[in-house]
Image 1 (cartoon, rainbow, N blue to C red):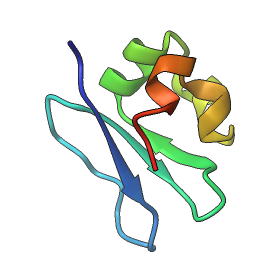
Image 2: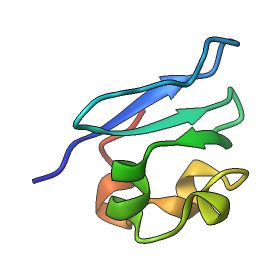
Image 3: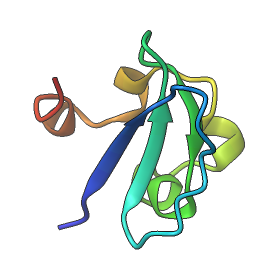
Length: 67
């Protein structure tokens, strides 16, 4: 099972050289950065992911795991 890490955007660089899928989201749950693993997991390109709300990117079963 792939894991997804959410990083809250507090002005820090979004570099995430990790084997995990990483989405950087704002307080309003809007994606401002995504690594390749996250885009692959979601099935969309980075340009399709960045700018969208988190709940529109995740499958319903994944949404329940996030607070």
